[in-house]
Image 1: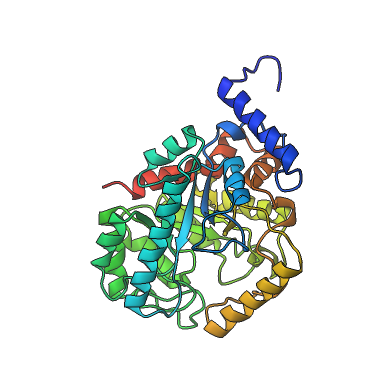
Image 2: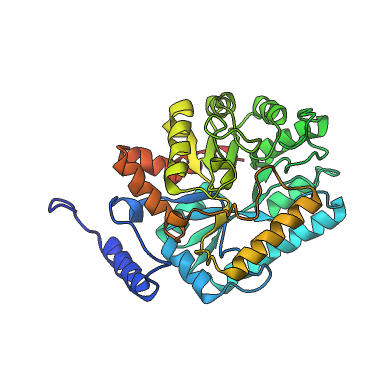
Length: 380
């Protein structure tokens, strides 16, 4: 930092706290220091969650997971409310409500760390208060596909992002693993229209190509691929073509790049590969229409024997359930070793800066683009 730059009291205190945490947890809480705008940026994970793969859903977050959140600099994240896949409609509804209740209780338990997000202004407030806001989102329509009136209830309960389909077909449309790729159904059209009316962002990340394009044309508000990659760099059903990236941008939406092995032909990705996809998306769609959706937890992963065993078991279970995608291998881990820190967004920001991207571009990718889309999609 040069002598003409002024360090605010807020930044000074925040950096002191970060340094204290970094000394206590030197590996997990390593930080990059090459880009100085991170502490004042609005940082949003388009798909993520507290904890890591070892965190037990339903149990209170542990101290390290809470500290990771506090250290991360995240103003908000889209947290997946389960279930996905072929769950009976009534059971799916109950499970979704229970999932929302769990996170509501965690927000009440640790209000200095977590915050409820219902509006874009709530994200700005969470950032100012140094909290991480939770945005409730679905990755499948199974909890309401037989009764679209349930969308009203879910909106009332705080759901603000809904992905129409997971990898397989549901009553709304086809997922990316359906060979027929039949597109959006009549119920799917009605769902998109109702979500527009309520103020729920339409997410198309796992949708089939025709379903995604149908939804983009149907929606009167911006839509998103909250977590995806670029098919031009890695040809995979979960990655989006240049035509799809442009269509999202033309409609005002955003495409978020994830940290999944689908970026790297089934192999664990690296930060450089993540950046390649971000830069390709910028070239195709423009800097106003690219974001980040890690599809991972905030806390660092511990790549030990227990982790590897659990990961392999989860991959096999997803295959047996029929919800896995090509390239899900037992060693294709869902994080990048050189981004395995709660401040992974800061690392990416520094790398973007070193590649010549301006602070304005970096701030857009870290969260400003998502904040704009949320503002427009959630308006009532």
